[in-house]
Figure 1 (tube, rainbow, N blue to C red):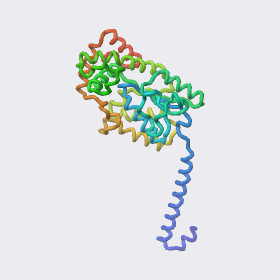
Figure 2 (figure 1 turned 90 degrees about the vertical axis):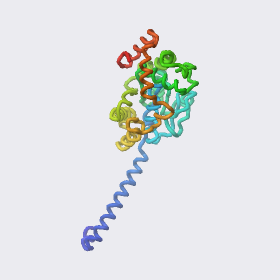
Figure 3 (figure 1 turned 30 degrees about the vertical axis):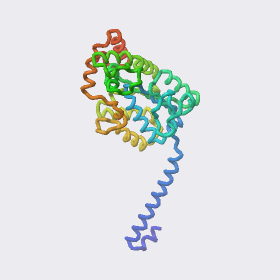
Figure 4 (figure 1 turned 90 degrees about the horizontal axis):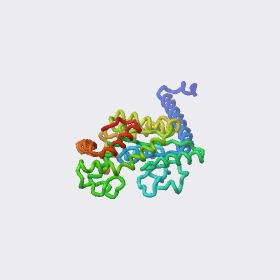
Length: 299
């Protein structure tokens, strides 16, 4: 071909070389696409569990993982609780895990240590190693956040985490009362934390909300724990990018900021100031929770 091109005017020869190069690139891309279609997905190799709980960044972690699973093409997941509505995959996310335990992506919005143990066991039974993630938060800050959230009238039927008349309670009365109703949620958080092994990645709410740099760094650690070695570099880059919409410091109004989940700074300050009014024995229990979870004791 080179000898034939040498006999042609240089401009025509250049066009012919360019066309040949384009054709070769197209062929290589076509082959790459065919190969890519045969590449398995992370959930073909692992059983996953995403666990959150009320006022510990439940919306934040769920959305970060939801975005990743959707971007990677997941179309099947299950919910751990019968009354659970939120999904972890847009498509095929309303299955119940107790009915279809072999589904490889499990989602628990009130994570229990039993969910961790059960999903780990399911993975062993179907020869798929378990990978889990859960989010934790300073227990006393969860109490303050729960007071602010429910005092505004959110989730009026959620009597597990707030008194029925919480909207009529000021900080001095309401924060100590919420410390009592939130005790079960926080206790279960600590139990699930203690049930975590090296196969459960623990995310701290504070690390995701401190700054954009901290958000990006912790999301990178999370995604590496969940998908490291199982997806391409370009896929990893894409899911990190889509997760940025959940970083409030970047000015985005992500899903986790919706439904009145983010409290006013002054509201949070006043609620935190009322934590001293929690009954002494109960406050002592919360201090012990802080110690177990690795938070500074106090508030």
